Amino acid sequence: MLEYPEPTKGASLILAFRPTRVLILGSGPLAASRTFSALEADSEVLILAQGGLESACEEIKWRASRSQVKVSDWSSDGGDSQETTVLEKFLDDTPGISLACITDTAIHPHRRSRDSCERIYRVLKARNIQVNTTDIPDLCDFTFTSTHRFTDATTQKASPLQIGVTTNGQGCRLSSRLRRDIVSKVPSHATLAVSNIGRLRSLAKEKASESKGKEPVSLVEDDGSDEIEEDSAVTTPNRPVPSRSTSETAVESARRRMKWVAQVSEYWPLTKLASLTETDMSELLEGEVPETPLTQSLMGISASSIHSLPSLNRGRIFLVGSGPGHPSLLTQATHTILTRLADLVLSDKLVPDAVLALIPKSVEVRIAKKFPGNAEGAQMEMMEAAIEAANRGLTVVRLKQGDPVVYGRAGEEVLYFRSHGFEPLIIPGVSSALAAPTFAGIPVTQRGAAESFIVCTGVGRRGKEIQLPAYERGRTLVILMGVARLAQVVQSLTNTLPSNKREGAAYPLNTPVAIIERASMPDQRVITSTLKDIVQALESSGDQRPPGMIIVGWSVLCLHGRGDTEVLEEGAEKGDERRVERWLGAHKWRVETGIDANWDLF
Image: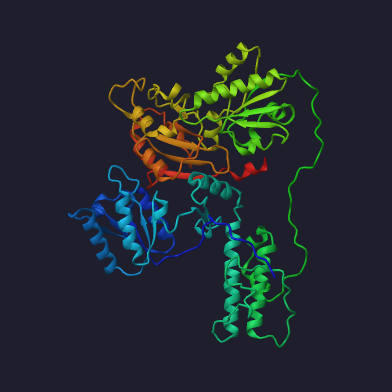
């Protein structure tokens, strides 16, 4: 008897679903996010909210004004029980709802109670409506994946290609990170390949209908073993295609074409699929594509043995800077230490995997446990581990992001190691304070726009607030480790009242600002706006991507488009409003992801 795999519980049934009508309960930012996802799935979105449209967030008001959603008032004077009655009447008057999202369980100060959620859940389930209740897993019939919809590389429009990642409740933030990692590895031409295969399938079906007098042709084998109508269902694309004959029926011809589509989808390089023309597709469906080997250019590095350097004095400690993140920005000294000399690597938690991957598997790597509230203890733990290993004669590498002495606490470690009889060698790294703005297209200095720059931290020792520099029109302010406290930073910079949180003049609200996250990495994100709108811009952009930094000053816009290097001309401040409009256009902010593709050369 045949044996089949035993199911392992705990997974989700992941579906690509397009509900006709979706009900959103609540009208805050999360409701807006759920609304956008439903609209992208061609669903009609109905919103029930306390206070109706007046209490809704700005995005929902904007979508309602464009008739993208319908917002109804859920207010009642009879408390929760009356609220349930209002919901029941709404559902009776609005048939066809298949999904509902309760989103106001995480909104303060009017957070919906669990009892209220349970009553609403029962009402919805009584009508066979599937429910998602935010932050209450046992009141969820379905959950949302961390989703990314690709943009077509040629048309810049939304692509059919879409991915979703779920950890099944084990780590929502981690699923977002994994999704970004996956997205960063998908080649840009994959979207065009998907579009071309879709067109190829459509052409195959059109030919089948033409040959059958416009009647639909079944493209499924009689035994159901070769389903080719559904994506990913062809389990045997290598099954031989019978030789063509003059007696071939329309159904046989249609099946043959679809099997060819399945085979090229599986085996042809994405670059070839992306380059298919209409003529290529027609010829392919007629079986006229030459059966010649397909070649792919492969870039590789010839293998060569790497001999170890002559043994240096053992029992040493190196303080090493790994740069902003991209492994090609490591200094030669850092690369040598990591790949040839290290016995133990004690790494900060923000050093990316691309750098850690260079370390030989035989070398032990420990990651610092520097989380909020534990930074001081984790720092001491790493320093003690370095001394213990060095006393055993090992070469220890304290690996830090950026440059060790630019807010890397290198000075503390130098003094500590020295007090224990070890004189560490500091290896400089490319500082993210300079590299990150460059990756974002922002010069920290630029003639006509920024005569100087200043680097500071957004958080002081043990989490205390610091005094920020005063506004100077010709100076760029680089704030490291301040994104998590963006609202307080902006308040300190723009507050016109005397404050001990800023040294002097306040920053104008129209001052350009950029938030650069995961600089130099494939999922780098740059959010640009003004001090007036940057907090809302960050909140509207989804989850944060540490590490991040803040750049404030007119250098942020000076190289955008045709450039603007007249910021420091006499009287130029009178044109700042127009200057910002030219930069941002009709929008309040701009979000850009990824880095220049040419970095793949390195």
